[in-house]
Each structure stands twice: as C-alpha cells, then as structure tokens.
Length: 126
View 1 (cartoon, one colour):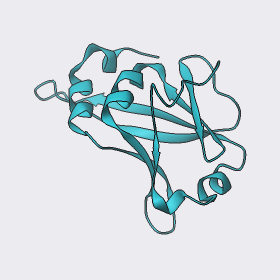
View 2 (cartoon, helix red, strand yellow):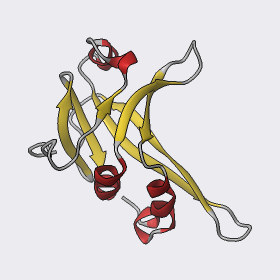
View 3 (cartoon, helix red, strand yellow):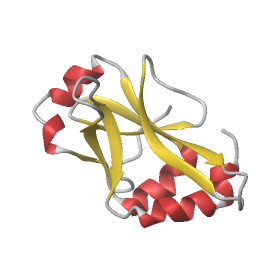
View 4 (cartoon, helix red, strand yellow):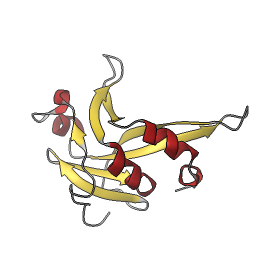
C-alpha cells in the first residue's frame, strides 16, 4: 500500500458502537481490509456476494489500496471496490452474533452493490 486515498476521494463512516477507541482496541495494531466474495449460482447465471471486512496483521499489498485511517486504525480496500465504495457510502459497524462480534461493512446505497455484482469487475480475479 502506498499513500492513503484522502477522505475527499473516499470517506468511510464509523458506527457509534465502534467510536471512542473501540475500533482501535479491536484492531490491536492490525489493518482492517475491505474486500468481497462472490459466487455464481448455476441456475440462471445469477451472482451472489457480500462485502467483507477482515483483519490483516501487516500492511497489505498487491491489489489492496490504503484508505485514510479512521480512529487511528489503518484501512485498506480491494482496488476493484474503490469506485463502488466512493459512491455507496460505506460505514464500518459491529455485526455478528453476541459471542462473535466483528466489523462489517454497510452501505448507504446498497443498490450500487447489486449493480457491482453484475459488472465484469466483480468477476475479475485479484
């Protein structure tokens, strides 16, 4: 990862449950990387998928682009997601079952995710 993209280009929100140092405590020095998974269903050629947030022990490289840190936590995103994230309004929230809470990504404009799934970019390998 090189210089982080400025917030003026791609801004990521933070849910209230992760403010006040909670995200930094969860990160424990790791980088939070936004990525995605997709799969093609055999019936009808439909694609399904989801955005994912995973912890990386170091500074990711390759197709991961550095984003502006949030609350002192380093962020990165799969290069293929940059336009989607810039337009869709991503927010990091806490999700999962009560005994397995973890960061998740929600979008202010989730319909853009559905459009992304139909685009060739979602099918291209990293």
